[in-house]
Figure 1 (spheres, rainbow, N blue to C red):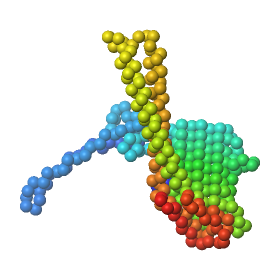
Figure 2: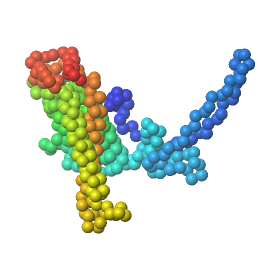
Figure 3: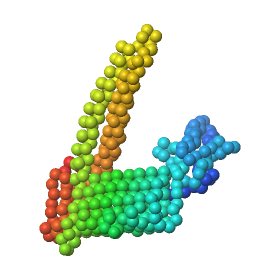
Figure 4: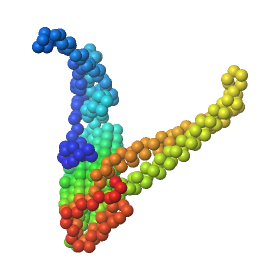
Length: 354
């Protein structure tokens, strides 16, 4: 495995698969300590013992005759959340190559290759032991492709990943990730946009944009292939976050206005018994609809702002680090850029204000 979004070494999609009915957690009742004495013979009271309660989430059930034992409801991937909630996420293993569209709510492991023209769309993480050839990949979790992601038949391979991606090599592909892109080999003639770091041996052609920075042994080629390395994306994220905050403020004012209108309507429409006449219920539904839709729009802005804020925090150490850059490589830092005109070595560039 490569380096994940958090910088930890290890495979992103090393699924801890548990079979249906298997124990996933057991509570061991606490044992009270024994009081002791100090060197002067004074009593030392045993400290209180902490106890915990098992907290089962999705895909987990308590054993019928053992309340301190949690079992997997079905075969899936073990997961423990930060708060201690234990889940078993749905999981599917697909033998051989993918030659049809696949959609799955959970994590998926594909033993073969995803063939051209097909789509794999999963809500969790995705591990592909073969390659991706001119296909469309969508996953909300992490992605691991053991071989490579490559275009086929004149069509680019496309990847949308909500986590980080580990890939053997990339050629003629379009890839977007919220996290990092770690490539064991080279990135060739591809468009990469990453919320985290992009790391590869070499980058030739195309455009690589990464909020967390770009690291490569070499970039461009002796023949002068146009290659763009862009870490100015962090500045764009900052602008988008500012715009989102403005939208949130505007939408909040709208919601407050709708709330006031609804309150006034209800106050002025009720009779002595607190009942709104049937003839006015249509107007009431309209007021409620306006408020509900406004609140939903505001929540959408807030979720996107939270995501953008997380991406910006990951850009603190953003930089371009390349051992060798060949002519016609463009190094973009957002507010400034440098076009390489002769071979440069040991490049380290960091955008201002990030």
